[in-house]
Image 1 (cartoon, rainbow, N blue to C red):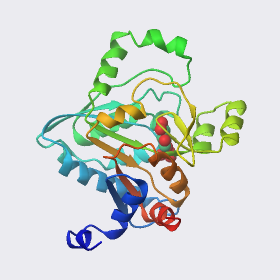
Image 2: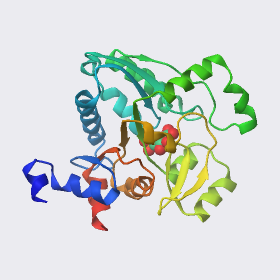
Image 3: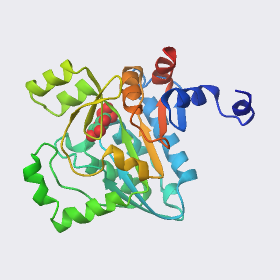
Length: 258
Ligand code: BG6
């Protein structure tokens, strides 16, 4: 609309934010599916946006894992830590993925890039509730969980359901269930169908989607035409204040049907 044109907000970003029902969308050009460099420019945009938005002083930043987040981590810079005390904590367990893309590794890299601090959470993803409940009482785990609860920033990606199920070595039985229930997206251990319904949950400790409502700055980083469906499905559950950082590949596909 005219107002957003006058204020200089690119129309496409405003339109996509409206379609997805969230407050903010930032789009970089290209499609990361065919041009991996696009993810790097998304990382630079994340760095710039955080530098503008985050308050001075202490910031507790909870980060998720994944290949997208691994690229984001590498693009953060010491400029972010100017006037700020940054502490990176893994948003959830996450052990069980390849080491380099676990949330612990992402947090360590983010701390290294910015000159901030980080903490690790050593709890496997795929253990039963009975096994992990007593772990929650362990001081080394409890102190990190408390920090996660105090996070004022969350940075996460959104995965495609089947890619995530395979990467996590989920059983043929569960993969069958996900297919039957037409899961298309995964975030925070929850799998969603196209309408945004949770069709499967990996029991895990740490941050859950309902907790995001209380977090002032939430960044969802997901791009590429192949992820468009997953982005749309997750966004039915995203908190209003979410910033989606994406690319034209995903954005054009999301706007096509809208
Ligand atoms: C996982 C996170 O590590 O990465 C998921 O636990 C996330 O919540 C996923 O959706 C995204 O992975 P990628 O590789 O597509 O960025």
